[in-house]
Structures are given as structure tokens and as C-alpha cells.
Amino acid sequence: MDTIHRRRGLGRSLLTAATEAAHASGTPTLFTTYSHHMASRAHFERTLAAAGWSTPQPTEYTIVGQAKWVRSAEQEWQPLLARAARQGFSMSPWTEITSSDRMEIEAAIRQGEAPAEWHPDLFLREGGEPLSLLLRYQGKIIGWIIGERDGDLCVHYRRGCLFPAYRKHGFLIVGLFEACRRQAELLGEDSVCVNWASAGSDMARFMETRLLPLLDGNFASPPQLAATRSERPGGYLEIRYLARHQGR
Image: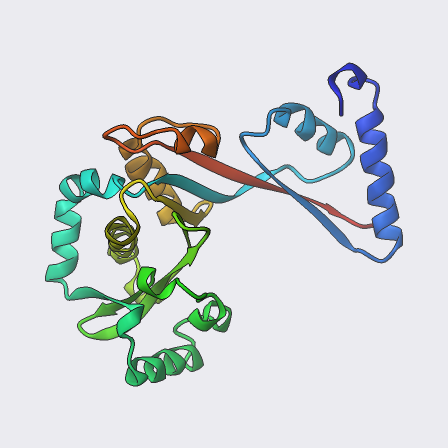
């Protein structure tokens, strides 16, 4: 709502009318998502509350940064990287996948070790294979990280799957490090990594407490990132919120 027209109940009236129309047409549940960087976030949340929507909850964390962050991480995370290697954790690029590997992936999904909706073939796109990894424990496939190209110099890492039996060891974090290290080699250190995690997950907490401090600044928008070419990478954190409205 335009600033000069606020505090008149217009936003609430519009939202209520739209909500009632959607429910009347047979839509049982509505939802909205938005960034914590949203300029009018406080006004929007008050409008949602007044119109009977649920309290917004964080649903997704995204950290965007230049791939050069791996240089600092390699030093600071050395104990974690070394421990994972000692435990038998390893990674291989998707470009080296074999027919036996594919059969092992299919078997793992059939046996319920990984959900079918996270099948890597659903997310692999042309150009993403060199930036995607198979994760292994003592040679056995235990997950994967899929890199999704977004233009020439940006890669999204939103599909990181690790089988439940191998969580709590930091293996997915080590895999993310290796994926971004390979990206720095292939696309350059100023290329952009976009790392995703579900709110409340161990990965989200790690990203916020251990990854974000490696970035030079907590910027609010990509243009500032693109202008950053300092020794340490620029970056920013985005938290997306979700609110719902249930029909009566």
C-alpha cells in the first residue's frame, strides 16, 4: 500500500476481499512468502494479522556470497575437513558418475534412504554436472549436492541430500565447501554461490553462525554484492517467512 494511503484499513480490506474470494472459489488454504529484507515488512505483518492470517514463521535461509569465501573457510574449518576425511568421507564430481553409481542411487531411493522427490535427475540441468557432487562414506553413496547454474557466474546449491543415518557429522557442510571450491576453480573466485537451507535446520544454523562471518558485510541486495571485489567476499543473508490463511 502506498505510504500516503496507509492507516485507513485499505490494505486489510483488499486482503480480506481477496482471501474470501479465493476460499469461495474452492481454494482451502492460501499462503504468502516474503523476505525479511522487505522494506514494509512490519506494515505487511500487521495487515496479515488483522486479516486473520497465521503468525509468519521463517521457512528458508539463503546466503549469497562470492566463491572466494572458501579460502578463509579452508583455514578456519580445517579440523572439520580433516575429521571427515579420517572418518572415510569423500566426494566425487558428477562428471565421473558410473552406471554402478546410478544403480546404487536408484536402490537407495527404493529402500527409502532418500525421498523420491529428491532424486538428482529431477534437478540436474545442462552445465550443472561439473558443479554437482556425489557424497560417499567408505565408498558407499550417502547423498549428493546439485549445483544449478543461473547465468554464467552464479550457481544455486539448494538440493543437498544426505541420508539420515549419516547426519550430525558435518558431511553436508564439507560437501558444500567442496562444491563451492570447485566452483571457484571452474568459474572464478568472484563467481556467486547461493546456498540454501530450511529454517531451523542444522545447516541453517551453521550458515548463519559459521559461513556468514566469512563474508565481508551483510548486504541487503545482489547489486551491492556484484560491486564488491575486495579480498574478502561480499555477501548477504536472506530469511524467507511464510504465513497461511485457512478457509473456514
